[in-house]
Image (tube, rainbow, N blue to C red):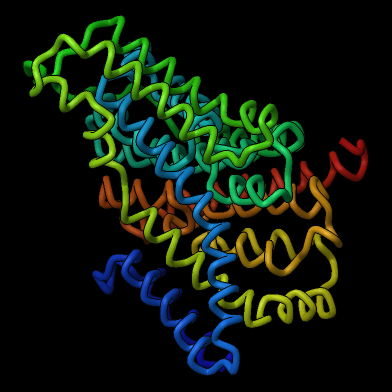
Length: 427
Protein backbone atom coordinates (compact mmCIF):
# COMPACT_ATOMS: atom_id res chain seq x y z
CA UNK A 1 0.00 0.00 0.00
CA UNK A 2 2.69 2.48 1.02
CA UNK A 3 4.64 1.83 -2.18
CA UNK A 4 1.59 2.51 -4.33
CA UNK A 5 0.78 5.75 -2.49
CA UNK A 6 4.37 6.98 -2.75
CA UNK A 7 4.42 6.09 -6.47
CA UNK A 8 1.22 8.06 -7.10
CA UNK A 9 2.68 10.98 -5.17
CA UNK A 10 5.97 10.94 -7.13
CA UNK A 11 4.20 10.65 -10.49
CA UNK A 12 1.97 13.55 -9.50
CA UNK A 13 5.02 15.61 -8.62
CA UNK A 14 6.69 14.85 -11.92
CA UNK A 15 3.57 15.92 -13.80
CA UNK A 16 3.43 19.14 -11.76
CA UNK A 17 7.11 19.93 -12.39
CA UNK A 18 6.66 19.38 -16.14
CA UNK A 19 3.30 21.12 -16.32
CA UNK A 20 4.19 23.25 -19.35
CA UNK A 21 5.76 20.53 -21.57
CA UNK A 22 2.91 18.15 -20.75
CA UNK A 23 0.32 20.94 -21.19
CA UNK A 24 -1.64 19.60 -18.22
CA UNK A 25 -2.64 22.12 -15.56
CA UNK A 26 -0.94 21.37 -12.25
CA UNK A 27 -4.22 21.84 -10.37
CA UNK A 28 -5.76 18.86 -12.17
CA UNK A 29 -2.70 16.73 -11.42
CA UNK A 30 -2.66 17.74 -7.76
CA UNK A 31 -6.34 16.97 -7.25
CA UNK A 32 -6.02 13.57 -8.93
CA UNK A 33 -2.91 12.68 -6.95
CA UNK A 34 -4.49 13.76 -3.67
CA UNK A 35 -7.73 11.82 -4.16
CA UNK A 36 -5.97 8.72 -5.51
CA UNK A 37 -3.59 8.58 -2.54
CA UNK A 38 -6.49 8.56 -0.10
CA UNK A 39 -8.52 6.16 -2.27
CA UNK A 40 -5.68 3.62 -2.22
CA UNK A 41 -5.21 4.16 1.51
CA UNK A 42 -8.85 3.51 2.42
CA UNK A 43 -9.34 0.59 -0.01
CA UNK A 44 -6.27 -1.23 1.26
CA UNK A 45 -6.84 -0.34 4.91
CA UNK A 46 -8.51 -2.64 7.44
CA UNK A 47 -10.24 0.25 9.20
CA UNK A 48 -12.17 2.51 6.82
CA UNK A 49 -13.72 4.41 9.74
CA UNK A 50 -10.28 5.41 11.05
CA UNK A 51 -9.16 6.58 7.60
CA UNK A 52 -12.28 8.74 7.26
CA UNK A 53 -11.63 10.26 10.68
CA UNK A 54 -8.03 11.05 9.68
CA UNK A 55 -9.18 12.66 6.43
CA UNK A 56 -11.80 14.75 8.24
CA UNK A 57 -9.19 15.96 10.71
CA UNK A 58 -6.81 16.98 7.92
CA UNK A 59 -9.54 18.75 5.96
CA UNK A 60 -10.38 20.77 9.05
CA UNK A 61 -6.78 22.00 9.22
CA UNK A 62 -6.48 22.64 5.47
CA UNK A 63 -9.72 24.59 5.25
CA UNK A 64 -8.20 27.39 7.32
CA UNK A 65 -5.43 27.86 4.74
CA UNK A 66 -7.86 27.77 1.82
CA UNK A 67 -10.28 30.28 3.35
CA UNK A 68 -7.36 32.56 4.17
CA UNK A 69 -6.12 32.46 0.58
CA UNK A 70 -9.59 33.06 -0.84
CA UNK A 71 -10.20 36.03 1.45
CA UNK A 72 -6.80 37.62 0.81
CA UNK A 73 -7.04 37.16 -2.97
CA UNK A 74 -10.52 38.71 -3.02
CA UNK A 75 -9.34 41.78 -1.11
CA UNK A 76 -6.44 42.30 -3.52
CA UNK A 77 -8.68 41.86 -6.56
CA UNK A 78 -11.05 44.45 -5.13
CA UNK A 79 -8.19 46.93 -4.65
CA UNK A 80 -7.06 46.30 -8.22
CA UNK A 81 -10.59 46.79 -9.59
CA UNK A 82 -10.61 50.25 -8.02
CA UNK A 83 -7.17 51.06 -9.50
CA UNK A 84 -6.03 51.39 -5.92
CA UNK A 85 -2.48 50.41 -6.76
CA UNK A 86 -2.14 53.63 -8.76
CA UNK A 87 -1.33 55.12 -5.36
CA UNK A 88 2.05 53.38 -5.80
CA UNK A 89 2.60 53.33 -9.56
CA UNK A 90 1.90 57.04 -10.08
CA UNK A 91 4.88 57.89 -7.89
CA UNK A 92 7.50 55.98 -9.94
CA UNK A 93 8.99 58.51 -12.34
CA UNK A 94 12.62 57.47 -12.90
CA UNK A 95 13.89 55.85 -16.11
CA UNK A 96 17.36 54.97 -14.79
CA UNK A 97 17.71 51.17 -14.88
CA UNK A 98 19.66 50.79 -11.65
CA UNK A 99 17.50 53.19 -9.68
CA UNK A 100 14.31 51.65 -11.01
CA UNK A 101 15.58 48.15 -10.19
CA UNK A 102 16.16 49.13 -6.57
CA UNK A 103 12.79 50.85 -6.32
CA UNK A 104 10.93 47.87 -7.80
CA UNK A 105 12.83 45.31 -5.71
CA UNK A 106 12.46 47.10 -2.37
CA UNK A 107 8.81 47.89 -3.11
CA UNK A 108 8.17 44.25 -4.00
CA UNK A 109 9.94 43.06 -0.83
CA UNK A 110 7.75 45.06 1.55
CA UNK A 111 4.56 44.78 -0.49
CA UNK A 112 4.96 41.01 -0.48
CA UNK A 113 5.23 41.03 3.31
CA UNK A 114 2.02 43.05 3.61
CA UNK A 115 0.06 41.14 0.97
CA UNK A 116 1.56 37.86 -0.29
CA UNK A 117 4.27 36.91 -2.78
CA UNK A 118 1.90 35.51 -5.42
CA UNK A 119 -0.35 38.56 -5.51
CA UNK A 120 2.62 40.93 -5.33
CA UNK A 121 4.31 39.19 -8.26
CA UNK A 122 1.16 39.55 -10.35
CA UNK A 123 0.87 43.23 -9.47
CA UNK A 124 4.54 44.00 -10.14
CA UNK A 125 4.63 42.13 -13.46
CA UNK A 126 1.60 44.15 -14.56
CA UNK A 127 3.33 47.31 -13.38
CA UNK A 128 6.55 46.51 -15.27
CA UNK A 129 4.57 46.08 -18.48
CA UNK A 130 3.52 49.72 -18.11
CA UNK A 131 7.05 50.87 -17.26
CA UNK A 132 9.42 48.93 -19.56
CA UNK A 133 8.95 48.44 -23.31
CA UNK A 134 12.02 46.27 -24.04
CA UNK A 135 11.23 42.62 -23.27
CA UNK A 136 14.82 41.65 -22.37
CA UNK A 137 15.08 44.44 -19.81
CA UNK A 138 11.63 43.66 -18.47
CA UNK A 139 12.46 39.97 -17.95
CA UNK A 140 15.53 40.84 -15.86
CA UNK A 141 13.38 43.05 -13.68
CA UNK A 142 10.78 40.31 -13.38
CA UNK A 143 13.50 37.89 -12.30
CA UNK A 144 14.35 40.23 -9.44
CA UNK A 145 10.65 40.60 -8.67
CA UNK A 146 10.45 36.83 -8.11
CA UNK A 147 13.47 36.88 -5.78
CA UNK A 148 12.16 39.98 -3.96
CA UNK A 149 8.62 38.65 -3.58
CA UNK A 150 9.78 35.34 -2.13
CA UNK A 151 12.31 37.01 0.19
CA UNK A 152 9.69 39.51 1.35
CA UNK A 153 7.08 36.84 1.89
CA UNK A 154 9.33 34.59 3.96
CA UNK A 155 9.57 36.88 7.02
CA UNK A 156 5.88 37.78 7.20
CA UNK A 157 3.15 35.47 8.54
CA UNK A 158 0.88 36.54 5.68
CA UNK A 159 3.52 37.00 2.98
CA UNK A 160 4.08 33.42 1.85
CA UNK A 161 1.71 30.47 1.99
CA UNK A 162 4.40 28.30 3.60
CA UNK A 163 5.06 30.83 6.38
CA UNK A 164 1.29 31.15 6.76
CA UNK A 165 1.03 27.38 7.11
CA UNK A 166 3.64 27.41 9.88
CA UNK A 167 1.89 30.31 11.57
CA UNK A 168 -1.56 28.74 11.38
CA UNK A 169 -0.13 25.40 12.52
CA UNK A 170 1.35 27.03 15.63
CA UNK A 171 4.99 26.38 14.67
CA UNK A 172 5.85 30.10 14.62
CA UNK A 173 4.40 33.26 16.14
CA UNK A 174 3.84 36.42 14.10
CA UNK A 175 6.11 38.76 16.06
CA UNK A 176 8.98 36.31 16.38
CA UNK A 177 9.08 35.25 12.71
CA UNK A 178 9.19 38.88 11.62
CA UNK A 179 11.95 39.73 14.09
CA UNK A 180 14.13 36.71 13.30
CA UNK A 181 13.83 36.60 9.51
CA UNK A 182 13.71 40.18 8.28
CA UNK A 183 17.52 40.58 8.26
CA UNK A 184 18.29 37.21 6.54
CA UNK A 185 15.50 37.93 4.03
CA UNK A 186 16.97 41.36 3.29
CA UNK A 187 20.38 39.78 2.75
CA UNK A 188 18.77 37.26 0.38
CA UNK A 189 17.47 40.22 -1.64
CA UNK A 190 20.36 42.71 -1.40
CA UNK A 191 23.14 40.35 -2.54
CA UNK A 192 21.62 39.46 -5.96
CA UNK A 193 20.32 43.03 -6.28
CA UNK A 194 23.85 44.40 -5.95
CA UNK A 195 25.23 41.83 -8.38
CA UNK A 196 22.62 42.57 -11.03
CA UNK A 197 22.94 46.34 -10.54
CA UNK A 198 26.56 46.25 -11.74
CA UNK A 199 25.39 44.76 -15.05
CA UNK A 200 22.69 47.31 -15.76
CA UNK A 201 23.47 50.58 -17.52
CA UNK A 202 21.50 53.34 -19.18
CA UNK A 203 17.80 54.04 -19.10
CA UNK A 204 14.71 52.00 -19.79
CA UNK A 205 12.41 52.80 -22.68
CA UNK A 206 8.82 53.23 -21.64
CA UNK A 207 5.99 51.85 -23.77
CA UNK A 208 3.80 54.27 -25.66
CA UNK A 209 0.77 55.15 -23.61
CA UNK A 210 -2.64 54.45 -25.04
CA UNK A 211 -5.29 56.55 -23.41
CA UNK A 212 -8.58 54.74 -23.10
CA UNK A 213 -11.80 55.77 -21.48
CA UNK A 214 -12.27 53.88 -18.27
CA UNK A 215 -15.27 51.61 -18.19
CA UNK A 216 -15.45 51.81 -14.40
CA UNK A 217 -14.36 55.29 -13.31
CA UNK A 218 -13.50 55.68 -9.66
CA UNK A 219 -12.82 58.87 -7.74
CA UNK A 220 -9.56 59.58 -5.91
CA UNK A 221 -11.42 59.18 -2.63
CA UNK A 222 -12.74 55.75 -3.64
CA UNK A 223 -9.32 54.53 -4.83
CA UNK A 224 -7.55 55.67 -1.69
CA UNK A 225 -10.29 54.38 0.61
CA UNK A 226 -10.28 50.87 -0.88
CA UNK A 227 -6.47 50.72 -1.12
CA UNK A 228 -5.72 51.74 2.47
CA UNK A 229 -8.66 49.85 3.93
CA UNK A 230 -7.77 46.69 1.96
CA UNK A 231 -4.07 46.75 2.83
CA UNK A 232 -4.96 47.65 6.39
CA UNK A 233 -7.31 44.66 6.61
CA UNK A 234 -4.50 42.31 5.56
CA UNK A 235 -1.94 43.87 7.89
CA UNK A 236 -4.50 43.71 10.73
CA UNK A 237 -4.77 39.90 10.50
CA UNK A 238 -1.87 39.12 12.90
CA UNK A 239 -3.21 41.72 15.34
CA UNK A 240 -6.70 40.19 15.12
CA UNK A 241 -5.27 36.74 15.86
CA UNK A 242 -3.33 38.05 18.87
CA UNK A 243 -6.35 39.81 20.33
CA UNK A 244 -9.03 37.17 19.72
CA UNK A 245 -6.92 33.96 19.52
CA UNK A 246 -9.03 33.01 16.50
CA UNK A 247 -7.29 31.49 13.44
CA UNK A 248 -5.97 33.90 10.76
CA UNK A 249 -8.66 33.06 8.21
CA UNK A 250 -11.22 34.60 10.58
CA UNK A 251 -9.26 37.85 10.53
CA UNK A 252 -9.17 37.87 6.73
CA UNK A 253 -12.89 37.16 6.51
CA UNK A 254 -13.54 39.96 9.00
CA UNK A 255 -11.48 42.36 6.87
CA UNK A 256 -13.26 41.23 3.71
CA UNK A 257 -16.63 41.75 5.39
CA UNK A 258 -15.70 45.31 6.39
CA UNK A 259 -14.38 46.09 2.89
CA UNK A 260 -17.51 44.58 1.34
CA UNK A 261 -19.73 46.78 3.49
CA UNK A 262 -17.73 49.93 2.73
CA UNK A 263 -17.67 49.36 -1.06
CA UNK A 264 -21.41 48.72 -1.08
CA UNK A 265 -21.97 52.05 0.68
CA UNK A 266 -19.61 54.19 -1.43
CA UNK A 267 -21.01 52.80 -4.70
CA UNK A 268 -24.67 52.82 -3.67
CA UNK A 269 -25.50 55.75 -5.96
CA UNK A 270 -23.92 54.23 -9.11
CA UNK A 271 -25.92 52.37 -11.74
CA UNK A 272 -25.83 48.57 -11.69
CA UNK A 273 -23.41 48.19 -14.63
CA UNK A 274 -20.70 50.41 -13.09
CA UNK A 275 -21.25 49.07 -9.59
CA UNK A 276 -21.00 45.41 -10.65
CA UNK A 277 -17.36 45.63 -11.77
CA UNK A 278 -16.40 47.33 -8.52
CA UNK A 279 -18.13 44.84 -6.25
CA UNK A 280 -16.84 42.00 -4.12
CA UNK A 281 -18.94 39.61 -6.19
CA UNK A 282 -16.94 40.58 -9.28
CA UNK A 283 -13.67 40.20 -7.34
CA UNK A 284 -14.72 36.72 -6.22
CA UNK A 285 -15.19 35.71 -9.85
CA UNK A 286 -11.66 36.88 -10.68
CA UNK A 287 -9.65 35.20 -7.89
CA UNK A 288 -7.24 32.45 -8.92
CA UNK A 289 -9.30 29.37 -8.02
CA UNK A 290 -6.99 26.95 -9.90
CA UNK A 291 -4.16 27.92 -7.51
CA UNK A 292 -6.40 27.36 -4.51
CA UNK A 293 -7.42 23.94 -5.85
CA UNK A 294 -3.75 23.15 -6.46
CA UNK A 295 -2.96 23.87 -2.83
CA UNK A 296 -5.91 21.74 -1.75
CA UNK A 297 -4.90 18.77 -3.92
CA UNK A 298 -1.24 18.78 -3.00
CA UNK A 299 -1.93 19.24 0.72
CA UNK A 300 -4.42 16.36 0.65
CA UNK A 301 -1.77 14.19 -1.00
CA UNK A 302 0.77 15.17 1.65
CA UNK A 303 -1.72 14.42 4.42
CA UNK A 304 -2.07 10.85 3.11
CA UNK A 305 1.68 10.38 3.49
CA UNK A 306 1.44 11.75 7.01
CA UNK A 307 -1.46 9.48 7.97
CA UNK A 308 0.26 6.37 6.60
CA UNK A 309 3.43 7.11 8.60
CA UNK A 310 5.65 7.76 5.57
CA UNK A 311 6.69 11.22 6.76
CA UNK A 312 7.54 10.01 10.25
CA UNK A 313 9.75 7.32 8.75
CA UNK A 314 11.43 9.88 6.48
CA UNK A 315 12.12 12.15 9.45
CA UNK A 316 13.69 9.30 11.36
CA UNK A 317 15.81 8.35 8.34
CA UNK A 318 17.05 11.92 7.81
CA UNK A 319 17.84 12.34 11.47
CA UNK A 320 19.82 9.07 11.52
CA UNK A 321 21.72 9.60 8.27
CA UNK A 322 22.21 13.39 8.41
CA UNK A 323 21.11 14.60 11.82
CA UNK A 324 22.31 18.18 11.40
CA UNK A 325 19.40 20.61 10.96
CA UNK A 326 21.77 23.09 9.31
CA UNK A 327 22.07 20.60 6.45
CA UNK A 328 18.55 19.15 6.44
CA UNK A 329 16.64 22.45 6.37
CA UNK A 330 18.69 24.16 3.60
CA UNK A 331 18.40 20.94 1.59
CA UNK A 332 14.62 21.22 1.88
CA UNK A 333 14.88 24.80 0.63
CA UNK A 334 16.92 23.80 -2.43
CA UNK A 335 14.50 20.96 -3.11
CA UNK A 336 11.66 23.48 -3.06
CA UNK A 337 13.15 24.95 -6.24
CA UNK A 338 12.54 21.65 -8.01
CA UNK A 339 9.09 20.99 -6.61
CA UNK A 340 6.55 23.28 -4.97
CA UNK A 341 7.46 24.53 -1.49
CA UNK A 342 3.93 24.04 -0.12
CA UNK A 343 4.07 20.23 0.08
CA UNK A 344 7.65 20.32 1.34
CA UNK A 345 6.68 22.48 4.31
CA UNK A 346 3.60 20.36 4.87
CA UNK A 347 5.83 17.29 4.87
CA UNK A 348 8.25 18.90 7.33
CA UNK A 349 5.37 19.83 9.63
CA UNK A 350 4.44 16.17 9.62
CA UNK A 351 8.02 14.98 10.13
CA UNK A 352 8.82 17.14 13.16
CA UNK A 353 6.22 17.53 15.90
CA UNK A 354 5.63 20.44 18.28
CA UNK A 355 6.42 18.31 21.32
CA UNK A 356 10.00 17.87 20.17
CA UNK A 357 10.31 21.30 18.55
CA UNK A 358 7.94 23.78 20.26
CA UNK A 359 6.71 27.06 18.79
CA UNK A 360 9.44 29.44 17.54
CA UNK A 361 12.12 26.76 17.64
CA UNK A 362 15.19 27.19 15.45
CA UNK A 363 13.98 24.59 12.92
CA UNK A 364 10.65 26.31 12.21
CA UNK A 365 12.16 29.76 11.66
CA UNK A 366 14.95 28.38 9.48
CA UNK A 367 12.42 26.29 7.56
CA UNK A 368 10.25 29.36 6.91
CA UNK A 369 13.26 31.17 5.44
CA UNK A 370 14.62 28.27 3.37
CA UNK A 371 11.29 27.09 1.96
CA UNK A 372 10.16 30.65 1.25
CA UNK A 373 13.31 31.81 -0.54
CA UNK A 374 14.71 28.55 -1.97
CA UNK A 375 11.89 28.40 -4.51
CA UNK A 376 13.41 31.39 -6.32
CA UNK A 377 16.30 29.26 -7.61
CA UNK A 378 14.08 27.83 -10.36
CA UNK A 379 11.10 29.57 -11.90
CA UNK A 380 8.79 26.62 -11.18
CA UNK A 381 9.83 26.54 -7.53
CA UNK A 382 7.40 29.16 -6.23
CA UNK A 383 3.90 30.47 -6.84
CA UNK A 384 5.38 33.88 -7.69
CA UNK A 385 7.67 32.32 -10.30
CA UNK A 386 4.92 30.24 -11.87
CA UNK A 387 2.63 33.29 -12.07
CA UNK A 388 5.33 35.40 -13.72
CA UNK A 389 6.20 32.55 -16.06
CA UNK A 390 2.61 32.32 -17.22
CA UNK A 391 2.08 36.05 -17.58
CA UNK A 392 5.26 36.79 -19.55
CA UNK A 393 5.83 33.36 -21.14
CA UNK A 394 9.29 33.18 -19.54
CA UNK A 395 11.41 30.27 -20.75
CA UNK A 396 12.63 27.84 -18.09
CA UNK A 397 16.15 27.71 -19.56
CA UNK A 398 16.39 31.51 -19.81
CA UNK A 399 15.62 31.84 -16.10
CA UNK A 400 18.09 29.07 -15.30
CA UNK A 401 20.89 30.93 -17.11
CA UNK A 402 20.11 34.51 -16.10
CA UNK A 403 18.45 34.48 -12.69
CA UNK A 404 18.94 31.10 -10.97
CA UNK A 405 22.55 31.70 -9.93
CA UNK A 406 21.64 35.11 -8.48
CA UNK A 407 18.82 33.56 -6.48
CA UNK A 408 21.08 30.75 -5.24
CA UNK A 409 23.81 33.12 -4.06
CA UNK A 410 21.23 35.24 -2.24
CA UNK A 411 19.64 32.14 -0.72
CA UNK A 412 22.95 30.86 0.67
CA UNK A 413 23.95 34.33 1.93
CA UNK A 414 20.65 34.70 3.80
CA UNK A 415 20.93 31.20 5.28
CA UNK A 416 24.44 31.91 6.54
CA UNK A 417 23.20 35.21 7.96
CA UNK A 418 20.38 33.48 9.86
CA UNK A 419 22.64 30.78 11.29
CA UNK A 420 25.26 33.37 12.25
CA UNK A 421 22.77 35.63 14.02
CA UNK A 422 21.29 32.67 15.87
CA UNK A 423 24.55 31.08 17.02
CA UNK A 424 26.71 34.13 17.68
CA UNK A 425 24.21 36.73 18.83
CA UNK A 426 21.26 34.51 19.91
CA UNK A 427 18.82 36.84 18.17
